[in-house]
Length: 357
Image 1 (cartoon, rainbow, N blue to C red):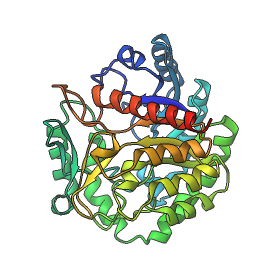
Image 2 (image 1 turned 90 degrees about the horizontal axis):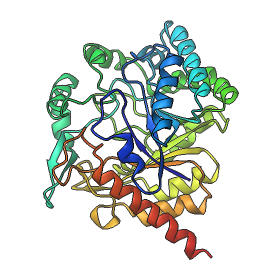
Image 3 (image 1 turned 90 degrees about the vertical axis):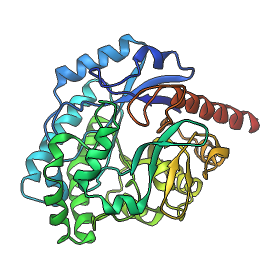
């Protein structure tokens, strides 16, 4: 297992590589090129410069999060052929700089949704929060404005400005698409791309839908254990795998996260783990919270133990953190709470290992 943190390049992060290097047990970063428009090829020379910057700080760049999939691929339009070829070329380029794992998602139109990015918690910290009725009342443009106003000037992955203008039109498009057709479009993409993932030795790790229930009549597919089984059956290659995000899947009270981990990590199909906690107010309202089990509804010990028991050798990162101690950062991606989370998870991992001896 390797513990890493997510990091955004080109001055788009309040956290420095030097600070990440000083975090005990953290060996690398999951990074990205958010300046490249969705659907375009990631240039090799830009990736080489990024790798050098990260390596010079004493860290590894083995995970990319993420190369976003153009909406025309998800829609199944004829234009998808060129975007798939661009995606394959990007796979080739990231392989040349030593990337071993690619986290991506197949969520239509909206990558993730929250009603508030700085909800005050009882301890005085702030965190991202979700109130279902508030989100339903928003349209994507309104939600984007709310999130941008609280983003502290940083980019928000999945809410890139060039995508916002087409969101309403895209939502209308999906109203005429069955969920089964969406599955077919996903399989088409996998069958085209996975042979190249095998060739370039890059594990593809799809991220669950966030939250894992329908919004705006959009198809949601990576939402529960049954759907994950169906997804993995679309292409049986081990390179067609998962990012298990405990916070995304754990948003649904119906999902047993340790059991999900045991099944799919046991099959060698989990390549990346996002581990975080959350506190439910009811079935569809929740606050993100500190990583400790006692702070939320998820049992972090059982989650980490499920990975340990299945001999997990992939990448783990603490996911969204709170803003505490006066830190000003991209929502969810400050240094302090994620560093606390990383070392809490590493402590659990060490203790579970020693218990078995």
